[in-house]
Image (cartoon, rainbow, N blue to C red; front, top):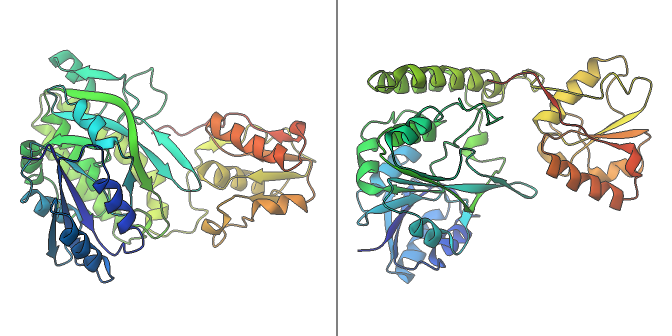
Length: 392
């Protein structure tokens, strides 16, 4: 019996699939089985799966009509023979020691949590924010329950304590099968929230580690970035599905409160983008700390993520007006909706200061050093932690 099974649902990812499969095949823990589930791909993904399955006996290849990722994962479970299972998305990849590290940290637990890197221009690490260690008593598991969907720990500054992301975790196969019988198969967004919430409530012990060997590719054409008119219906289904499950739990009050807070967050922060609203239809979550200090000065804005968009909209409506230039290294991801330009535009733009519009201090410092390397004076580069005004 293999030590770990890994299920990889596949749908139209011919460009990324070989890198994904190669990273799984080249694990230092070689005693694994790999289940590729082709969910009705219309490109050459199926042919790539067949080629790898013929070349390596550890691979099982399944082909089905397009039914969505939830059903693909569930159907893959029918072929799992090991006690433990994990999931990898077919456009992602993993470090070569990842499975070995997960396996060595089971310690009799029902779930092993690990972090992941979100990859755009560079890899940014995301680690679950609850204290690291083994949770194996009713009191410790109550802490997990109180922080599944929305952090109740005053020491955790973010609303997210546990990243409800199915990949980068190691599960017990028997429990996964039971959970797949309960999840809402109609969900096309946030299906991981549904699955992992239910799974954790079945756990008697959890090991939260600082392992980080999973690389999640945040690409513009992925399912996560697809616009969908029925997104609010999806949230409605998610809410009702989990509410019914939570009502049966002994800690239903805490769980339903967290669920409602999570839904509030998703409705206000995700709905405009998910439904393709006008790009300026967004809740302001971050206030520009320099807004009242830069009137009368020409200002450049660096970064076009959520913080950057919030700053831009505030500056646009202020007395000083919009920034003289707005730049981002990934400008092409944003310039269909906003006037974002390549970073090189700073060399010819006229401005007195550059405001770095990011929340993370380490990322801000990296940008600062890049700007200094481009020849800009340090005293012209401004960054302070954004003032957060919306917390759900």
